[in-house]
Amino acid sequence: MNEQIVARHWLALIAPKAAPALATSTVLILARIWNANGAEHSLGNAVLMTALSLAAAAAGACASVGRASDPVIAGAAFTASGGLALAGVAGYADGISLPLLLWVLATAVTYGLAARYWRDDRRTALSHERHINEQREEHAHIERVETIRGTTQIEVARTGAAYAEQLAAALTARAMVPGFDPESLATAGLPELPARREDQ
Image (cartoon, rainbow, N blue to C red; front, side, top):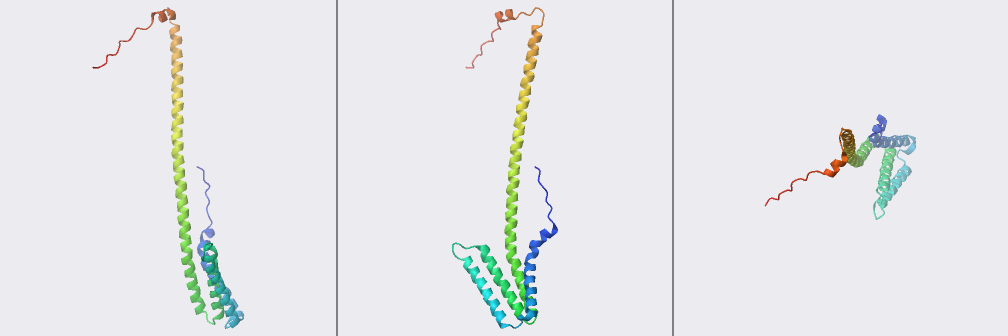
């Protein structure tokens, strides 16, 4: 089986693992830029970010309950809520220690949640690979059996052809023997074999 070998670039391998840290770092950097541009101790900006964060959390709660719940939408809404809360605190606070502490906590929580999905993806990929390998082994076994069967049929046909050639050669050689009369052989017949006695 000819399989295409695809070597992934090291950036493609490391990008999913670095995405949570990049996301939280981007939020922190933008919030600190916002802080330097007038958001520090701004009550209106704090109320706005609090309202947006609560709205995103409510949307996530609504998306996670009921029969039509969607975990992807709920996860995106809760992520947006956390990001808005981090941005609000980092933009409102005057020091860097509280925003850095929240950044570390947010990054740790993000990696904790992402690790669960990475494990599920790895299990799914391993299960799929195991299933594909089992199918390949089964097909290879069937192919081997069919090859043996075909080879056997070819050998049987060759043996039959060789027997027919030898029989024809023997008949031709017998007919060429001087004094051979096939009619007298046919009229004389073959001697009868003795009857088989059954054991009492």
